[in-house]
Image (cartoon, rainbow, N blue to C red; front, side, top):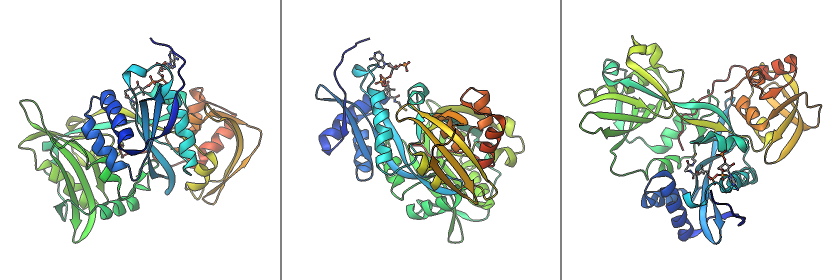
Length: 399
Ligand SMILES: CC(C)(COP(=O)(O)OP(=O)(O)OC[C@H]1O[C@@H](n2cnc3c(N)ncnc32)[C@H](O)[C@@H]1OP(=O)(O)O)[C@@H](O)C(=O)NCCC(=O)NCCS
């Protein structure tokens, strides 16, 4: 392991040279191609914030922030989706990524955001800087033939209008805690610049002229064998769209043995369990990257989200943040809205990571207490859980 005391400078990435240097760091870090990264960075540039770590005049790492919303309690909360965190192999294990994550908290907050979600290849790094796991994204693999008998009223049409997809999605995914409220440019950054060699398809489900579902997938020929469909997104707003789109995928059974819904593209409490006659024989689940969540501005996070109308209560918290320090606050929720005031007794004590997982409906306060991630007496913990009871976490968006 090398040790030195060169300072890390973190600054905005600007212009083609910066982008090219970061594209190279990123390619080496993720075993990708710099040219593909450049396409992606160029598409993101008008919308995203690129932050670079420099040492001795070289770009040695960086990350990207995508401004999005994130649904909690039915309302979109302003967020910066963190992506492409990378440090060049020659500059690792000297704290560069730590410096980037501390910078990320400050920058996201300066941009007026309350939250900074990410997908973690390494949980350790992010947990150290205040993120916490909400769930492991699931891959649900289903035998293509098990879908071929399903159907719905309506028809598929290729390449539905992007604005229409986002509008349909926005009206639909707010019933879970965690999905992104995506800007209309989202797919032009996250999907369009992808590898040209992999065939990729988008279809809408239409009932009359109404778009009621959407599927987006890659079709991958496996070495010496069958096609595997990798579904990146699957939105169904009616039962006809669900049966119709699944039956459409099932129609590929002559060439394809299985359909993989990657990155929790289908909600983890999967409709396949209730739709298929033998779900346990025809589907298989496996975990992949972790969805981690972090609050970067507690006041904004609490006041922007929705709260169940029946929730009412007051908790006094002491939240420890590895970047910003210890904060005491009183959270009062009533009639669907929250108020945060500084101070209070700190009757509930937790880290900002556990607080963020609780906020996301991913971890009950009582379970955090049992895991040693939160302290407080049972009645305060019960009140805390009562405030968001009923939320179901889901992160269908990969970025
Ligand atoms: C993950 C990644 C960004 C970490 O970058 P990094 O700059 O090496 O990270 P840090 O130096 O902050 O922390 C790494 C480790 O070095 C340790 N470390 C930090 N400063 C140190 C120092 N001066 N001396 C010795 N060790 C040090 C940290 O404690 C940490 O230890 P851990 O292994 O117990 O977690 C980098 O490995 C990478 O780019 N990987 C490939 C891409 C990737 O997976 N990105 C994450 C996608 S979500």
